[in-house]
Image (tube, rainbow, N blue to C red; front, side, top):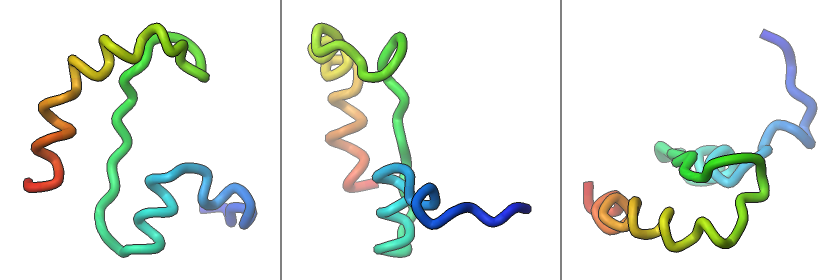
Length: 59
C-alpha cells in the first residue's frame, strides 16, 4: 500500500467521521450523473432514501 498525502487522506465526510469518532461510516451514492448533482434531483433522492435516513440512526 502507498502512503496517501495528508491533504487527500480525509477526502470526504465519511473518512473524517471514521477517523474522528472511531465508528463505522457509510456513504450512500444516490445521484445520477456527474457531481455536483443538480438540485432538481433532490426531491426524488429524498423520497427514495427517506426510510433509510430515518432508520439508520437506530440500527
